[in-house]
Amino acid sequence: MCWSAEADLVAGSVVAAVGVAAVVRAGASRRLPLAALPLLLGVHQLVEAGVWSGWAWARTAWAVIALPLLPLYVPTAVWCATRRRSAAAFTALGAVVALALTAALVRHPVTAQVHGHTLGYAVGIPAAGLLLAGYLLATLGSLLCSGDGRLRLLGWITGLGALACALLWRLAFVSTWCALAAVASVVLLTWARPPAPGRSVSPPAPPGR
Image (cartoon, rainbow, N blue to C red; front, side):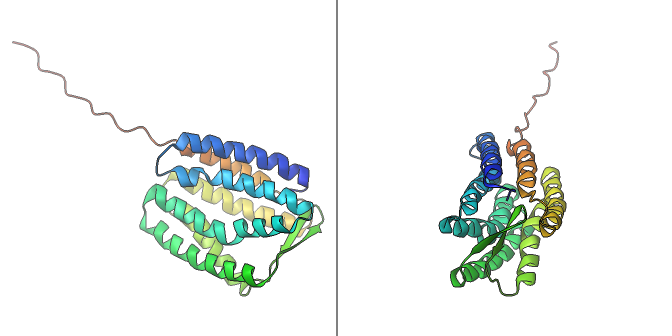
C-alpha cells in the first residue's frame, strides 16, 4: 500500500512494468512464476487505488491477493524455481494458512479506513497471531531456504522491510509497502534471467605427426 490513491497508481504502474520485464527475461523457464511476482504486486497496488475511492470490490480483491494468495503463491513459485524439499514444505504450510484466511474472508466482510496517511484493513481473522506467524514462515522461509543467494537476499530485504513498514504504519506516519515492493521487484528482475547453460569445450586435437 502507498500513502494515497495517486501514489498507488504511480507505484503500481512502475512495479507492474518491472514485472512485465521480469516475465520477459524469465521466458518459458522454471523461474517464470516467481519472476511474475512483481506483476502481481503491481496489480495489487493498482487495486488499492480503488480502495482509496471506496470501491467495495477493490477491498475484497486487495484482501484476496494479500491474505490467501501470497502465502501460497510465493513458496510455490520458489519450489518451481528451485525444486527444493524445503520449498515444498513451506508450500504445504502456505496452503494451510491460505485455507484459513480464505475461510475468514468468506465469513467476514473486508473493511478499510484511512489511518493517518495509510489505509487500515479489518477482516476479523481468528487466531490472527498464529496465522501471521505461519504466513511469514511460509513466504520468508521459502526464500531464505531457497539455496539461491539472490533469493536469500530478497528474503532478508522483505523481512526487514516488512518490519520497518509495519512500525511506520502503526505510527500512522506513512505507508512504505510500495517502496518495499519496488525494491523486491528490482531484485527479482535481476534474478529472472535463467543462467546460460554451460558450454562443453572439446579437448584440443593432438598435433599431427
